[in-house]
Image (cartoon, rainbow, N blue to C red; front, side):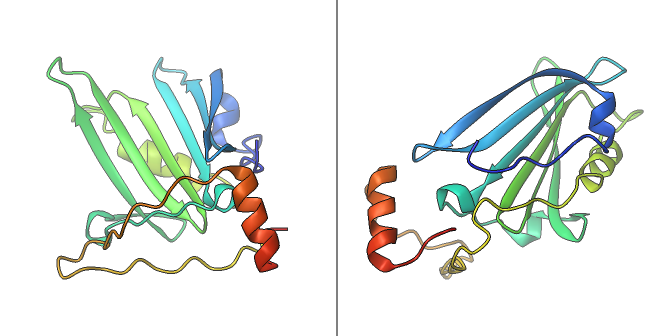
Length: 174
């Protein structure tokens, strides 16, 4: 991984059975990690982390949809339901340059998953960014509709091209 994942040893996650982990790359940088667990009551829980400082990416979130809080950070809690009736609860938030998602299969009116997801999220330790000295990311320019303006889509750069540009500019994430 291109970043140190949050340590789960002293969190409730340590009491869950591991169901595996996998990573994804953004621009050839392994900056996304998924860790799956089985809870004692048989549900599947997935913790996703994306260190945007590792790959130089950024994201924007609409504040009006972030009605929850995780350790002071705005968060969004949603319940998705398939036509079959199966449900997934999802909690998403960003802490600094680390984006998180928690997914739990199952949710119903008698046993809502929101409080459990919020408690699990609150138990996570602070993240350590891959590039703590990274230059601040410019905030998005918002259009008249309140959404970020999207300019021309840039070409995807290889890791070598990004490294060469950083070297030429004298900036580094180290």
